[in-house]
View (cartoon, rainbow, N blue to C red):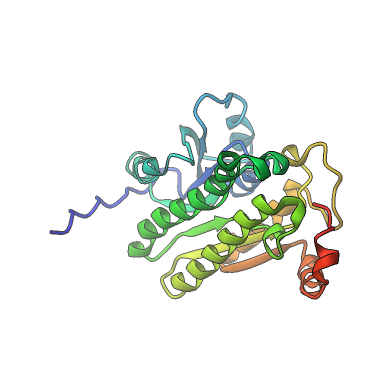
Length: 259
């Protein structure tokens, strides 16, 4: 016997609802500021983090309301419950941005199976699980935008960061296939594929060629969200050309490439 259908989510009184899963992410917050005007913004963050300063910039950017909720990406069993809670209390999710993730420590992960598994779980398994929950909510109503962050690190995985890179390679494949599956449903899946992003997550590392800032990534993503244009967006666009060439770099050279 099939289970009873979930009640239809109500419409938020403050217009569309934008949810940033990973609500402390610099890129996620930059996207939220650009989409805030006239919308309700929900920041889903790991419990126990200091979130007291997150709401004010979004209110200043024009958000009709800002809600901060607990969300543990690695607790797969909680995903459906969190999404259901947002839609029943706040309103139908119009835009969902999956901005959580970890870089991890490559040297540790090479020797510690649990450390490697944590990176793969957060950066691939948890992302795929949440995308599935959200897509299944959005498909029946034939509208909604999903944003899932890939990375150039997953285009041709390098020895220097193969644990993180392989997680992103898996997510890139999953999201690309899902975007095709969603074609014609009214649900849009945007797949940003940035290079090195200069920010808190990469602090202390030497920037790579064609690096971006969180604001530059957010600008490119928001353009796609507003256009409802699905698929991959390279950030910056020059990386697309670079990685066409990268396919032909001999393996003995490629394995010596830095992060």
